[in-house]
Length: 126
Image 1 (cartoon, rainbow, N blue to C red):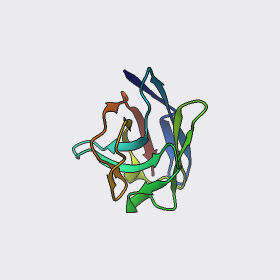
Image 2: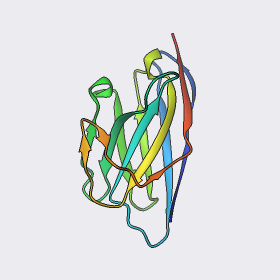
Image 3: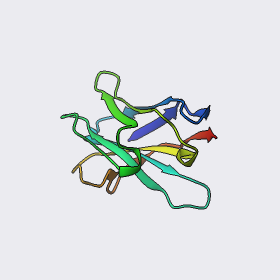
């Protein structure tokens, strides 16, 4: 089983930064890739970015390229989402997700995650 716990959300003004963390507790399960998603009120959940844990390869959706960075600490089994130059349209609930295998993604969206975190709120004011 895998448990994902996100932290680091909060409120920030436009142009500010936040770093989200996603700590994974995996028992007898090797996670191959982790991804970040977000959902704004009234909108569908969308993929933000993802990372292959054993290679460090990353992918991002166009809306966050150059502003957001996904990373992973193998020793801590924790994924991070560094968000810089935040915009009001980045507001939403952010979720991390994990997949055992294979790592398939499309335009920054991790496809078919096996596990989800509970989410953390990010609010960006103008």
